[in-house]
Length: 255
Image (cartoon, rainbow, N blue to C red; front, side, top):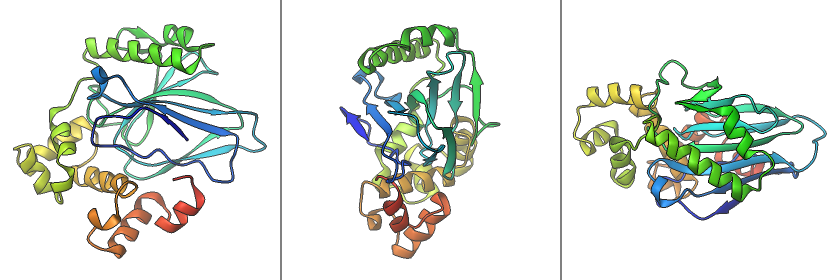
């Protein structure tokens, strides 16, 4: 994996899922400009360097983010990947070129409650035709593509398709002090019942599931005891979400 720049937002999802034995799949991230830092975690590229001998299975970790995915071999539709509460595995075939925008939790304003944990194919987002975006993306360098993605994201912002989410931003800003759903509710000055309703609308799953996903993500960047009560709690939660123990995951995937 290659990373360019960094995001000033305190929540930094880990995008793993490429098995160590696979050497011809490349994943790259670029941080958004400061003007989009409250909306976008990163712009990303996932592609093969050559045709693979067998289908590539991509292990996607839950991160509460929404991804807008452009398949450069299709040029017809974009895919909106909605948040998952557990890991999922995608069969991407033997050859592929994807470009994507990873939106921070809660900024997607369209209704996702009925499609959480899945995806929706679209030919237009807001008033932006996807075919025109492909015309500007295809045949360009990653640097030029990033400019296209920035322009596209700004257009979606102008149309209020995406917008900063003050509740999620407040929660992400105080993750280190949040241990329960009640803590989350207190941070945003809402009752747990109000928080439940708002999370259903904003992300598509419960505050409790959001907290579990965020804790998993934090465990990749911090010692697990700063996130979980003890080692057994960490291993149990990690296995429930990913299907692997932490040790087996680290041995299987690039981390």
